[in-house]
Image (tube, rainbow, N blue to C red; front, side, top):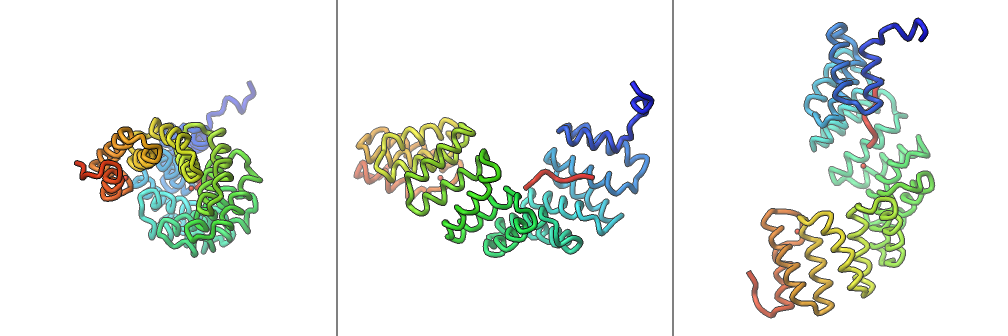
Length: 310
């Protein structure tokens, strides 16, 4: 062991190493010790906020970022990270303002353009989001997350072919990007390309078998192709993962009804209505009831990167 190995590392550097190793609570303790000695250490306040965000303590993280920014209003990462924390709390307008402050400091910060785009998506401003995400990928041509977010925004605008191109770009860089395969499947489904949809779903499922979204889209595609038995099997898989989600029960019921398996269909609709009482997702009670009446003839009783540190 060399002499330098005997020297005690600073608490700040310990915090950095612990954070990068995923020990967020221990990193927080190290930053607190560092700040007890150096309360004006701007990067320690920023990094403390990042550790708190990683622990899901977003309001406390914002307080730390605000301390960093009070000491250094030009701290790019603190503005960006503050936006992430605000976004996690659903405060999208405030998050957008934080990203704008980051970009005023450095207009070439690709992460802030991506994060700004995601905040705009959350606000339903999809065309504006596409512009921000275009800036992100122009600055970083291998920014897979930005390509996926861009595809999502394009889909929301009905621009499904362009969305597929964006997902394909992400997949050319990261072929095992499961979200890209799954969202690509949604775009293909919207275009009525059901066989291609199933292929994309299968690629996603091969990477992450327990991912509900591709199973759900796979079921919808099989149902659209008239393969109702296989559709039921797909939705049963999804229900096994998330039995509390009513629209999976609802679509399973529809497929069973098409197979004239009426008793099972009615049971599925009843499960969907039970979920409705818990206020979980669409379809509406009226849709479920209508589907049930059609069988019985009677009235019966639902994407950013980890906060950067210095």
